[in-house]
Length: 297
Image (cartoon, rainbow, N blue to C red; front, side, top):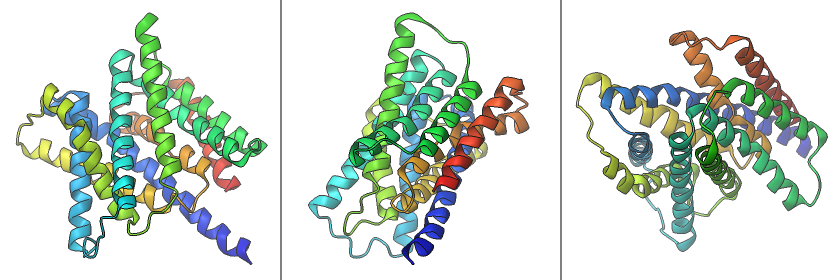
């Protein structure tokens, strides 16, 4: 009986995780537009992303009455600090990798390493090797991402440093995926998202101010910033944290791979940035890996 009840719930959770990956993918276009039109550095864009997303979710939780009765226990404060630290450090390490290499290499290594780290950690915790189907889904998805995101970039120490930063970012997000699966009494997914994003934004704020946070108050810039904070950040992370504990950790990690896939498809459709044969083969492999992981769940 437990299997018949749990299986549909896990399948729904997997679909919501995939939705969060698609929402994050739209943030790539929104973030690049915000940086271009407002003249912001990548670190400043990341700071705005976390602060605006956190503020939007806090406002929603407050209007819905979710802030009443919050007890700021030590476990609650610790969980918010951990979530903020991991979100902020993930963004900082990722954009450091972008600065040292390129967007393609940084994205490929960061996002591609997340399911590998999660699969390895899950196997160590369970003290057994991953199932062959799990290994197949991860291998297909990472191979597809490599084809989809491959781009020429610098070599030498810059490449080594960039890959190191990207691996640190991937390890940070993998840790976030595993840590947030364990619930904390008095802290639901909405509060975790709200205060975690705000804490991560506060962590990045000194660097953002150093690089400049000035933004022109124009209708197009404000609209992009609000969309960037509310939809791919606030709603995307809220959806991710909502079902993280009910879904397989490997499927949760694989869902992050939809971010670069969605960004690439948006670029193909809206910006006419043609993927080419290699890109479409990569998209097909990535989609196959996600499908295998979803069916496995």
